[in-house]
Length: 118
Image 1 (spheres, rainbow, N blue to C red):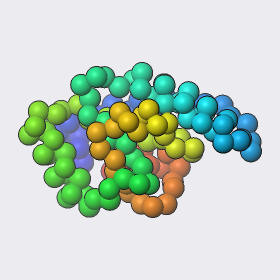
Image 2 (image 1 turned 135 degrees about the vertical axis):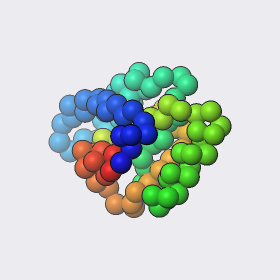
Image 3 (image 1 turned 90 degrees about the vertical axis):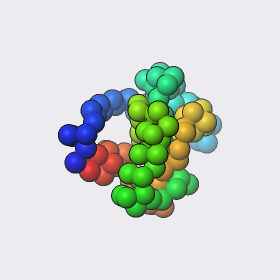
Image 4 (image 1 turned 180 degrees about the vertical axis):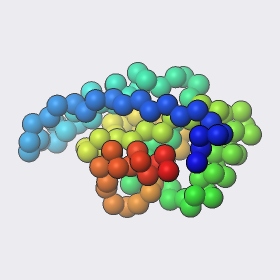
């Protein structure tokens, strides 16, 4: 639906290879490495919207209104960040300009990409 109105680029950052049954420390290390790769792809002027369980839930109209309001403030480069299975590193969350949630449930990031684009 957005095609006629904007350009959409999908940039994937590979998941960090991780062993089964990781400790909390190992999970944090994986999130940090993935976070560094994510942050390296974000331009300084970009408006970052992270998809988080703790984010704000909006209707389709509410999201459109939020984006429209930001565009009237001069923001035009939006980056939506979908985390891996362990979530997003704190550095990515700190870079976020807006936390968005589609559900209190966790979904595979590949599925969330399809939902987001739709």
